Image 1 (cartoon, rainbow, N blue to C red):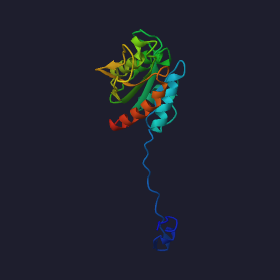
Image 2: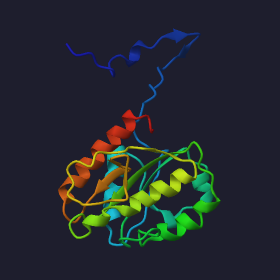
Image 3: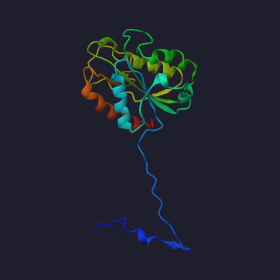
Image 4: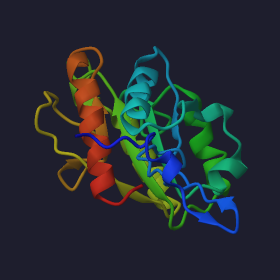
Length: 203
Protein backbone atom coordinates (compact mmCIF):
# COMPACT_ATOMS: atom_id res chain seq x y z
CA UNK A 1 0.00 0.00 0.00
CA UNK A 2 1.37 3.42 -0.95
CA UNK A 3 1.87 5.98 1.81
CA UNK A 4 0.32 9.34 1.10
CA UNK A 5 2.12 12.48 2.25
CA UNK A 6 -1.21 14.30 2.16
CA UNK A 7 -2.84 11.76 4.42
CA UNK A 8 -0.03 12.16 6.91
CA UNK A 9 -0.66 15.87 7.45
CA UNK A 10 -3.09 15.39 10.39
CA UNK A 11 -0.34 13.55 12.26
CA UNK A 12 1.51 16.76 13.04
CA UNK A 13 2.97 16.92 16.52
CA UNK A 14 1.34 19.27 19.00
CA UNK A 15 3.38 21.21 21.57
CA UNK A 16 1.78 23.85 23.80
CA UNK A 17 -1.13 24.08 21.42
CA UNK A 18 0.97 24.83 18.34
CA UNK A 19 1.21 22.57 15.36
CA UNK A 20 4.63 22.22 13.83
CA UNK A 21 4.43 21.79 10.10
CA UNK A 22 7.50 20.07 8.62
CA UNK A 23 9.48 22.53 6.57
CA UNK A 24 9.88 21.91 2.88
CA UNK A 25 13.18 20.21 2.31
CA UNK A 26 15.81 22.35 0.69
CA UNK A 27 16.14 21.42 -2.93
CA UNK A 28 19.50 21.01 -4.54
CA UNK A 29 19.75 22.37 -8.04
CA UNK A 30 22.12 21.59 -10.84
CA UNK A 31 21.24 24.91 -12.46
CA UNK A 32 24.32 26.95 -13.10
CA UNK A 33 22.65 30.20 -12.12
CA UNK A 34 25.85 31.72 -10.80
CA UNK A 35 27.84 30.94 -13.94
CA UNK A 36 26.79 33.19 -16.82
CA UNK A 37 27.33 32.40 -20.49
CA UNK A 38 28.79 35.24 -22.54
CA UNK A 39 29.19 35.21 -26.31
CA UNK A 40 29.09 37.39 -29.37
CA UNK A 41 28.03 36.42 -32.86
CA UNK A 42 28.04 37.46 -36.51
CA UNK A 43 25.63 34.99 -38.10
CA UNK A 44 23.79 33.61 -35.07
CA UNK A 45 25.61 30.27 -34.89
CA UNK A 46 27.47 31.13 -31.70
CA UNK A 47 24.23 32.27 -30.09
CA UNK A 48 22.70 28.91 -31.02
CA UNK A 49 25.52 27.00 -29.33
CA UNK A 50 25.32 29.30 -26.31
CA UNK A 51 21.66 28.34 -26.09
CA UNK A 52 22.55 24.65 -26.07
CA UNK A 53 24.96 25.25 -23.20
CA UNK A 54 22.40 27.23 -21.21
CA UNK A 55 19.80 24.52 -21.76
CA UNK A 56 22.20 21.77 -20.73
CA UNK A 57 23.24 23.62 -17.60
CA UNK A 58 19.86 24.95 -16.56
CA UNK A 59 21.37 28.40 -16.26
CA UNK A 60 20.14 31.82 -17.22
CA UNK A 61 19.89 33.23 -20.73
CA UNK A 62 23.20 33.84 -22.50
CA UNK A 63 24.29 37.45 -22.97
CA UNK A 64 26.36 39.29 -25.55
CA UNK A 65 29.70 40.32 -24.04
CA UNK A 66 29.24 43.81 -25.47
CA UNK A 67 26.29 44.33 -23.12
CA UNK A 68 28.10 43.29 -19.94
CA UNK A 69 29.49 45.78 -17.41
CA UNK A 70 33.12 45.39 -16.37
CA UNK A 71 32.08 45.38 -12.71
CA UNK A 72 29.89 42.36 -13.38
CA UNK A 73 32.84 40.43 -14.79
CA UNK A 74 35.04 41.48 -11.88
CA UNK A 75 32.50 40.15 -9.39
CA UNK A 76 32.22 36.67 -10.88
CA UNK A 77 33.89 33.48 -9.69
CA UNK A 78 33.32 31.67 -12.97
CA UNK A 79 32.04 32.26 -16.48
CA UNK A 80 31.52 30.47 -19.79
CA UNK A 81 32.64 32.43 -22.84
CA UNK A 82 32.36 31.75 -26.56
CA UNK A 83 33.18 33.29 -29.92
CA UNK A 84 33.04 32.55 -33.65
CA UNK A 85 36.03 32.93 -35.95
CA UNK A 86 35.49 35.47 -38.69
CA UNK A 87 38.86 37.07 -39.37
CA UNK A 88 40.64 33.90 -40.43
CA UNK A 89 44.40 34.04 -40.26
CA UNK A 90 44.47 37.09 -37.99
CA UNK A 91 46.78 37.19 -35.00
CA UNK A 92 44.25 39.12 -32.94
CA UNK A 93 40.67 40.39 -33.18
CA UNK A 94 39.77 37.12 -34.87
CA UNK A 95 36.06 36.94 -34.10
CA UNK A 96 34.66 39.90 -36.02
CA UNK A 97 32.34 40.56 -33.07
CA UNK A 98 32.16 42.59 -29.87
CA UNK A 99 34.94 40.43 -28.46
CA UNK A 100 37.51 42.12 -30.70
CA UNK A 101 37.26 45.44 -28.93
CA UNK A 102 36.42 44.01 -25.51
CA UNK A 103 39.53 41.83 -25.28
CA UNK A 104 41.91 44.69 -26.00
CA UNK A 105 40.18 47.47 -24.09
CA UNK A 106 37.93 46.22 -21.27
CA UNK A 107 39.89 43.10 -20.40
CA UNK A 108 43.17 44.98 -20.35
CA UNK A 109 42.10 46.71 -17.14
CA UNK A 110 41.03 43.56 -15.28
CA UNK A 111 42.69 41.08 -12.96
CA UNK A 112 41.06 37.66 -13.32
CA UNK A 113 43.39 35.79 -10.98
CA UNK A 114 41.64 32.75 -9.53
CA UNK A 115 38.57 33.01 -11.75
CA UNK A 116 37.32 29.91 -13.53
CA UNK A 117 36.69 30.16 -17.27
CA UNK A 118 35.29 27.65 -19.75
CA UNK A 119 35.57 28.42 -23.46
CA UNK A 120 33.54 27.43 -26.49
CA UNK A 121 34.15 28.25 -30.11
CA UNK A 122 32.22 28.01 -33.36
CA UNK A 123 33.84 27.61 -36.76
CA UNK A 124 33.65 26.08 -40.23
CA UNK A 125 36.15 23.26 -40.56
CA UNK A 126 35.35 22.61 -44.21
CA UNK A 127 35.72 26.10 -45.66
CA UNK A 128 38.34 27.29 -43.15
CA UNK A 129 40.18 24.10 -42.25
CA UNK A 130 43.43 25.96 -41.49
CA UNK A 131 41.82 28.34 -39.00
CA UNK A 132 39.14 26.28 -37.28
CA UNK A 133 37.86 28.10 -34.19
CA UNK A 134 40.96 30.29 -33.95
CA UNK A 135 39.07 32.93 -31.96
CA UNK A 136 38.55 30.43 -29.14
CA UNK A 137 42.32 30.24 -28.91
CA UNK A 138 42.42 34.01 -28.65
CA UNK A 139 39.98 33.90 -25.74
CA UNK A 140 42.24 31.36 -24.07
CA UNK A 141 45.37 33.46 -24.58
CA UNK A 142 43.80 36.69 -23.38
CA UNK A 143 42.00 35.30 -20.33
CA UNK A 144 44.89 33.17 -19.09
CA UNK A 145 47.19 36.17 -19.49
CA UNK A 146 44.95 37.92 -16.96
CA UNK A 147 45.18 35.06 -14.48
CA UNK A 148 42.06 33.01 -15.27
CA UNK A 149 42.14 29.21 -15.06
CA UNK A 150 40.58 27.39 -18.01
CA UNK A 151 38.46 24.27 -17.55
CA UNK A 152 36.84 21.92 -20.05
CA UNK A 153 39.62 21.09 -22.50
CA UNK A 154 38.39 18.57 -25.07
CA UNK A 155 39.69 16.01 -27.54
CA UNK A 156 40.24 16.89 -31.19
CA UNK A 157 38.79 13.52 -32.24
CA UNK A 158 35.71 13.65 -34.44
CA UNK A 159 36.67 16.83 -36.28
CA UNK A 160 37.99 17.27 -39.82
CA UNK A 161 40.27 20.30 -39.87
CA UNK A 162 43.90 20.96 -40.67
CA UNK A 163 45.02 23.53 -38.10
CA UNK A 164 43.58 25.51 -35.21
CA UNK A 165 44.93 28.11 -32.82
CA UNK A 166 42.40 26.75 -30.33
CA UNK A 167 44.60 23.70 -29.64
CA UNK A 168 46.87 23.76 -26.59
CA UNK A 169 48.93 20.72 -25.58
CA UNK A 170 47.09 18.55 -28.09
CA UNK A 171 43.57 19.44 -26.94
CA UNK A 172 40.99 22.04 -27.83
CA UNK A 173 40.82 24.80 -25.23
CA UNK A 174 37.13 24.02 -24.73
CA UNK A 175 34.01 22.98 -26.64
CA UNK A 176 34.33 23.43 -30.41
CA UNK A 177 31.26 23.31 -32.65
CA UNK A 178 30.67 23.50 -36.39
CA UNK A 179 27.13 24.63 -37.13
CA UNK A 180 27.82 24.52 -40.88
CA UNK A 181 29.02 20.95 -41.25
CA UNK A 182 28.30 19.14 -37.98
CA UNK A 183 25.23 20.91 -36.65
CA UNK A 184 23.67 17.66 -35.45
CA UNK A 185 26.63 17.18 -33.11
CA UNK A 186 26.50 20.60 -31.42
CA UNK A 187 23.77 19.94 -28.89
CA UNK A 188 25.09 16.52 -27.78
CA UNK A 189 28.58 17.97 -27.54
CA UNK A 190 27.30 20.82 -25.39
CA UNK A 191 25.54 18.40 -23.03
CA UNK A 192 28.62 16.21 -22.70
CA UNK A 193 30.81 19.27 -22.11
CA UNK A 194 28.62 20.59 -19.33
CA UNK A 195 28.82 17.20 -17.63
CA UNK A 196 32.60 17.29 -18.02
CA UNK A 197 32.72 20.73 -16.41
CA UNK A 198 30.72 19.44 -13.47
CA UNK A 199 33.13 16.54 -13.03
CA UNK A 200 36.10 18.91 -13.15
CA UNK A 201 34.66 21.00 -10.33
CA UNK A 202 34.10 24.05 -12.50
CA UNK A 203 30.69 24.75 -10.99
